[in-house]
Each structure stands twice: as C-alpha cells, then as structure tokens.
Amino acid sequence: MARAELMDYDKALELYEPVLGFEVHVELSTRTKMFSDAPNPAFGENHGADPNTQITPVDLGLPGSLPVVNETAVQYSISLGLALGCSIAESSRFARKNYFYPDLAKNYQISQFDEPIAFEGSVEVELEDGTQFTIPIERAHMEEDAGKLTHVGGATGRIQGAEYSLVDYNRAGVPLVEIVTKPIFGAEGRAPEVGKAYVATIRDIVRALGISEARMERGNLRCDANVSLRPRGQEKLGTRTETKNVNSMRSVERAVRYEIQRQAAILAKGGTITQETRHWHEDTGTTSPGRPKSDADDYRYFPEPDLLPVQPSAELIEQLRAALPEAPVVRRRRLLEEWGFTELEFRDVKNSGLLVEIEETVAAGVAPAQARKWWTGEIARIANTKGAEPAELISPAAVAEVVALVDDGTLNDKLARQVIEGVIEGEGTAAEVVEKRGLKLVSDDGPLIAAIDEALAAQPDVLEKIRDGKVQAAGAVIGAVMKAMKGQADAARVRELVLERAQA
Amino acid sequence: MSEITPEVVAHLADLARIALTDDEIQKLTGELGSIVDNVAKVSEVATPDVPATSHPIPLSNVTRADVPGETLTPAQALAGAPEHASDRFKVSAILGEEQ
Image 1 (cartoon, rainbow over the protein chains, first blue to last red):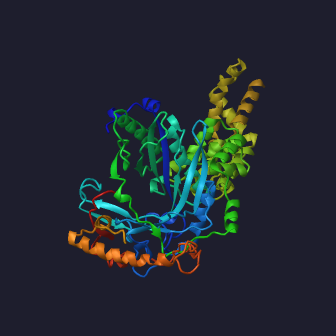
Image 2 (cartoon, rainbow over the protein chains, first blue to last red):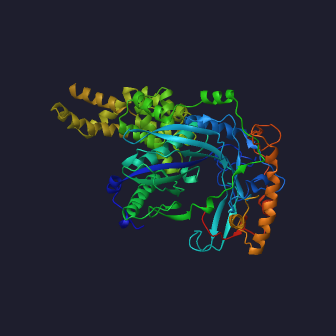
Image 3 (tube, rainbow over the protein chains, first blue to last red):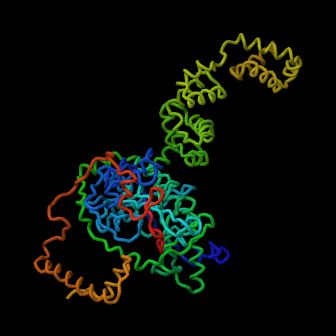
C-alpha cells in the first residue's frame, strides 16, 4: 500500500484499538550447536566462517546420525525463562515441525510444541519517558535455527525470479529460544514504542544473562511482529498479520506503526484483513504480503523420537534462579538514583551501550560523572575511529587508574587523554604510560615561574590589565605558559601564580 | 475405518511437494488407510490410565557437555549433494516464501 493510501495514525487510533503480539528468536551463544557438537556460529569467535565448515552429520540429517541435547543450551533456556518470570516445566519435550524447504536438510525442524521448557510469565518494559508497561509472556521454547539460502539469478538476490539457490548449513542447528507473548492490550497510541521497548528489554535481559551476543545486525535476535485492530467497543479480536524478520529496534517501531495505518485504511473502507505473514522492507518502510496462513502452516507436529524428555531438577532451577542478574528495568532505576545523572544523561549512557563499563568503573572507585565522561567521550571517540567496541579497548580498572592520576594532580585531562590512548595502544598500565611518555604534570613551581616570566616579558601590558580588574587578560599568559610546558602544567596553578604576580 | 480420504492424500502430497496422479492418489488412499487402521489396533488395548508415550524406556535428561568436536570438511559435506557451487548446496529455485 502506498504511503498516501494509509490512514492517518491518530485517526486510525480513534477508530480502532491495536492489539500486538511478538515472537522473538534469540540465538544462544553456547560453544556448540543445539543438537550437535559443531561449533556454533552465534558464539563470538566462530562468527563469519566459510560456508559449510561448521557442520556435522547431525546438522545435515545424514542417515545414522542422532541428535543429543546440549546441556548448556538447556540451562541458558531455563535462565531465560526464569528472567521472563515464567514457570519452568517439570517435563518438557521436543517435537518435529515438518516442512519442505531446503534451509534444513532433514525436512523438519526440531522445536517444542505442546511441552515448552518455560511458560506463563511477564516482563516489565520501560518507554523512553519512563512509563512502565507489562508484557505478558505465553511461552519460551527451545529449537534449532535453519541454514542460510542465497538466491542466485533474478533481481538482487530476491527469491522471485531466482534461477537457483545456494545453501550454507553453518547456521542450521544453532540453539534458539523463541519467546512468544500473549496478546498485548492497552498499548494504544504507544504501540510502536512498546514494541521497540520490548525488543530492547529482551536484548538487555539476554545480554545481562550472558546467554546471547544479541547483535541484531547479525541476526542473533530476530523479531516477528503481530498486529491486529478491532473497532472501538468490539470484544472480538480482529484478524492479525505477522510481519516477519523485523530486525532492528527502529524497524519494530516503524513496522507496527505501518501495519496499524495500513489495516485501518482497509477496515475503514469496509475491507477485510487477510491473515498472512508479511515481509518488512527496510528501505521503503512498508510491508508486503507473504504466503497466506493456511496449508503452509500444516506442520504435522509430533514428538521427536530421537530425543528424550528434558526434566530439570528443582535444585538446578533454584540454582539458576539464584544466579539471575537484576532485571534491566530495576537495574536502570537503581543506577539512575545512585549516580545522580539527569534522565537525559542517563539515556545517553544507556544508548551508548556502556552501562556495564561505567558501572564497573564506578565500582573501582571513580565518581559516576567522571566515569561517564571518559567512557562516552575519549574512549568512545577512539573506538569509533578504530571501528571497535569501547569495552574491547580498555578495562574499567585501567580507566579507574587513569582517573586516579587526574584526581591526585599527576595528570590534567589533556594528558589523561594521551595516557588513555597509550593504554589502548598496549603501552602498559596508566603509570607505565605516564613514565614512558614523560607525561607528568610539572608540580614544581620553579619551571612554571620561569615560563611565566618569559610570557610576561613578551606581553608586558598583561599585569597592568589585571591590576585594572581585567582578570581575563591572564588567559593569554596562561595559554603561552601551557604551550611552553607542552601541556604538562596544571593550568589552575599557573593562573594562581600569574594572579599572585599581579598583586605583588 | 480410517479417515484417510483422497483429499487428505492430495493435501499431504502437496505439503511434501510430490506430484501425484489421480491413480496414485487412489492407490495410496487404500494403502495408507490400511496402515492407519492397523496402527489404530493399539488403541483397542490401551486403557485411559496408560499415558501417551514417545519412548518405551523411561529415560530423560540425556545431554552432552558443550564442547566442540570434529566437523565435516565442505568436500565431505557436499559429497552426497546432487549439485553444488561455491562450497554450497545448489538447489532448484523454490517457489513460495522464505521460512
């Protein structure tokens, strides 16, 4: 539907109530796959391997091969279920989901159907202005990811008109947890924001748990968004569409908004919504129909005969529960209070993805404002030029060492920036970099006074101006001294000395 | 009697992307029907207090440690593929949608 045909967003909300639902797939970062001991491409260093180099006979479904469940993947799934407030099934089993498509070589995907590992939970999300919203969770189940198809021929790798497809099975068998919400009511005009905040919260949760790298650009976290509308006052739910693979937080927001406007335009003209999957187009910000939800969804589920039930002990569940990190929303509220940042400063920190680094730097004894300044300033800047993550460049402990040297007067900010750079370049600890590069501030007044005398000789009228009350005239002298000292002087001390001289 | 009708067989063939003639559908309707009828005999002896089971032996929690093992080389992986290109399996273009 062209943008011009969409119903105005506010008008759509006046007439209809949006009801949402999300399916989020999380790739777990275990070392090996869900059912085979092949290296898992969703585990950091395994990313980006050559095609078909991370597979075993199990991943290809070769005759005689048998799947065996990855113990760590089960534990990660239970932890995630617990973090979503779910109950953990005493007994859970796998099922075959049968379909014929070459992204899996077996003609079925091992998933869970009637006995998921986790069910009935809820998760608190926070919108940008601090409004809290509760998302009800229906279930979280374990399954395996499918391989990657590249369509060759036809237009730009799209499936339509392709001559043939090439399959790389490296991703086949990557452990996945699919999190399914219940219908979400009451989001109203903020539905797009709620969708975005929900996906962001899932990302934060799995990162805090350390069970997924959660990099959406790599497909570690993928979202399908369900949207339906019902006329105001109507009880019965409207027909929903499922927009597949909305794979950035901003896209979730845009896709939900688009579907509300598109469906409202159809309904208002007396049309009906087709229950179908739809594709999201990042470039145009629109959705287009995929296959209708009918025969294609006839998956003929049955219990997986090659795998045994998973029956986690109560001890294991309690052990994993005790190890759960603080919920992201709770943690954010606590840190906001402890650090005394403004909402805006805090949001910047949150969006920079440096919350953990700053928290650890504060724990190492640095004032929160200082920790924020160094991480979001100089370190982020260097990381940006290197195309790296700030956290990969320098440790919170090393940052704390540098800040301690500023606090005790050994360094000023300018020198500290050079020390940070030295530490990042691998020149040693902060103290070693100061030593090697000779970056210490000159703490002895003698050389400072000599430099001041020289500067005053070049600008003889400065003292006169200061005596006339034009204190800012000292700036010219301070600048000249700092230059002469190659920045290794405490500007505040130089200023004191210049003003003393004027009073003499 | 079995619930296997020609329509069910045609539907299954469609899901499995197998082209069947009307004669084949008729033949399979009879054959599949008798298989289902035979298997259904089990329910004659199963009483309501016998829970459904997918395994004859009561085992659970058979897992393995998360330790990488050996992988196939691309050449080994592709050895049984009818066609391949650029170290990937080559399949005919699939009509329909990506899963």
